[in-house]
Amino acid sequence: MFFEFGIIERSCQAWNEILSENGFIKNLCSREWSFLV
Image (cartoon, rainbow, N blue to C red; front, side, top):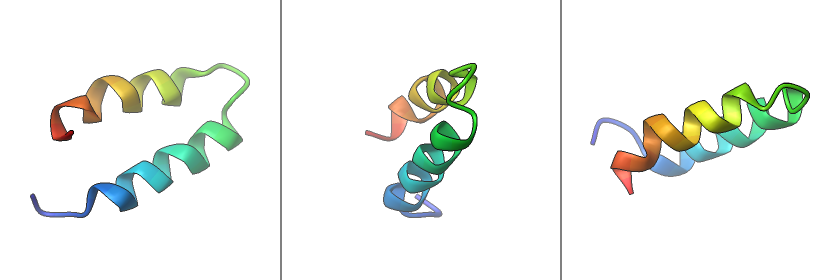
């Protein structure tokens, strides 16, 4: 892995808060980063 998952997770959470209105980022992060878990 070239980066820590924690950083990505926090970034996703930050975007979730900013764009929580449409919920797009949350779904995108869940879908795109699920393979890292």
